[in-house]
Length: 190
Image (cartoon, rainbow, N blue to C red; front, side):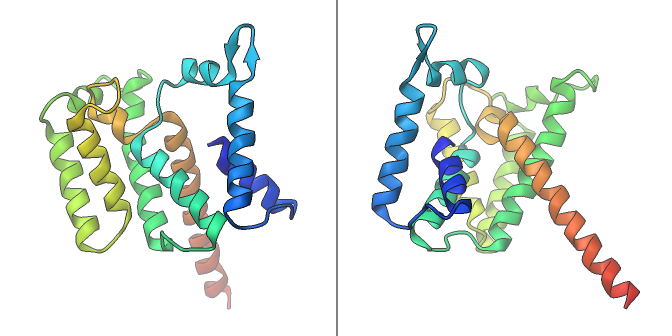
């Protein structure tokens, strides 16, 4: 995530040159910063104390974003990104109200073992892959990672969504809806 952020900052200030050299340089800078100790713990350890692991889709989206910025190669189309943001927003709106105590129904229990959540995500994955939406590949990786116990958690939700992905996805959906409303409003005025 830090590497992606450094790419954005360098690109906005016009310091960033595309290619492998710049990518390696920024990756070393990010790794160096994460290794810096604060009160005996590295910054990376401090970060993991707040969020133990990122969800598989967030890691994949960051990887896609980094590669696209580094090599001017489009991996995800606009439709793929839209699918990622809408899935993240929907998943967060299903999970986090109950996790925050705003609902009496606990949706986190759907993530244990074989459940309606697994069936729903599998169906969404199949539909996305059938429509050639590459975000479906990240969902497929999420399901495979869950079955292979790649992360410490044994709950599917932790493989699909995390607070950072949730916030970014909700903001991106709001931005997308807002731009659609503005474009329709302008057409209506004309």
